[in-house]
Amino acid sequence: MNRLEPAGSFRSAWPEHDPKRMARDFLLWRHLRVVRARTMRHIRGLLGGGRSTPVTTTYGVKMWSNWGDKTYAYCHYGTYGSYLADLLASVREPFCFVDIGANQGLFSLVAGQNASCAKIIALEPVGPTYERLVANLSANELDERSEALNFGLSDKVGEFPITLSKGHSGLATLGDHGMQLSREHTQASVRLQTMDALAGHLPEYLPIFVKIDVEGHEETVIRELLQSPHAKRIIAIFYEHDDRWTDKGAVNALLDDAGFEHSRIYGRGKHYDVLATPLGV
Image 1 (spheres, one colour):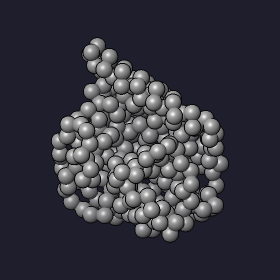
Image 2 (cartoon, rainbow, N blue to C red):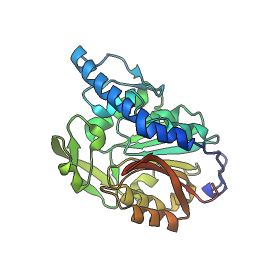
Image 3 (cartoon, one colour):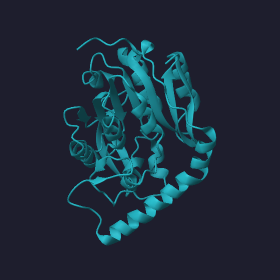
């Protein structure tokens, strides 16, 4: 395999999303998608829910149905929109997709639709959710291009408590705020590892596209990534942000110090996604 140049020489024509269309989407259409997903989740539950084979979602990928979980319903009906999917589809040279907080694997599966995605590394620390991730990767014939890891990325190593929200696997959080959310909660123990453990799974020369959805642990994860020797190969970091439990100033400072631009915002209000890319990429 030919050695690829560092991310500093990577060039991608990231798609431009029309600001007016995005405003309409986040003010209206996203809310309607949420209502549809929640309504259909309850209807499917009443009708008996799951099938014996994977079903095709709005994103065009196959997933094993899991109608008891609101997160799955959002995946099935395309509630998260097309923004990250568009970004992943736009990469035209071989790359590695690192999915931190993969849940059941939606965006790992979406990345796998792009033939340029040579490797997928998906991290999910919660045991039952991890098992669904593995099954969904297999359902999309991504076994040879993917590796699912049953741990979370952090700045410490060991077993730690995580708060789980009943009926909404995507709200699992290592943060103290988990017990304050207005849902029934339980706690489980999950394995955390530092970047040293993740590094051994990364292909040596591929540019890296990172997605982070860790419900308040973003600052720690981004710090681990950017302090790693592999940071020079990162072409994009797409991460979820919530003003209620993530320090925007601290995250921005980390990105600024590492030479990342972070002005592309997807969403409105306190909760939104951000695309950060190395300056000039």
